Length: 287
Image 1 (cartoon, rainbow, N blue to C red):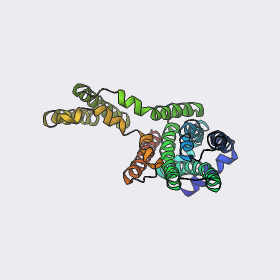
Image 2 (spheres, helix red, strand yellow):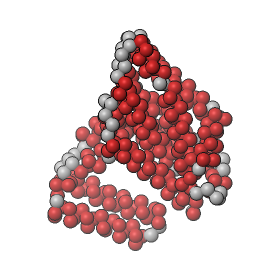
Image 3 (cartoon, rainbow, N blue to C red):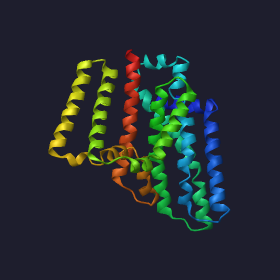
């Protein structure tokens, strides 16, 4: 895994990706800091950090688009898949390489709060909490980009899909509030999830019995819950999609509040997409 990490991290600088990513990230963040803090003489650094969410929309797709798509395009992925290194180690190595470059870009911006602390008043704990939140939030975004890159051999396609996915996650909270919360809507949506899970199992196992059995089991669970505890289905759609609300959980970090629940959530989210990436590559490997 360490060898893959070093190889991927060095490849960022052997191509133009690292320089474009760092240049764009620092140019845009520097422009926001200059206009939002220096020109206005405002010590509110956490308000500037909120602009990072916008920067991520463009920076993260650029960072992750080539992780697997370029390997597939150049057919070098076969060398990786036939090497003695496990697929999990390959995926983790690429993920950590992208995360390392992401941390480098965040580390450079530390000069901004230091500048404010020297010439003004700085809310230290809020800034520290915000940076900690951005580390875990960025890891989640990178895991999403990693998964998308593993599904295509076109870098541009991977970047665009990643961009619109992150854009959807950015505005998911308003969409959640507009979702129906009635009993019937919850039951129908739960049924759709059961069918979707069955289709996913079939695509991965090509076993109709397993897929149909899982769908039938999901339908049975829905029926039992309806008879025993139908309150579960009220607001079920909102509760389901709220799990994907990454930015909502970042709010506590920006206020200097460290919650173990949010940390576990971010780690679980990243781990899920890393696992899905491994499964996607394993499926292609055996096919």
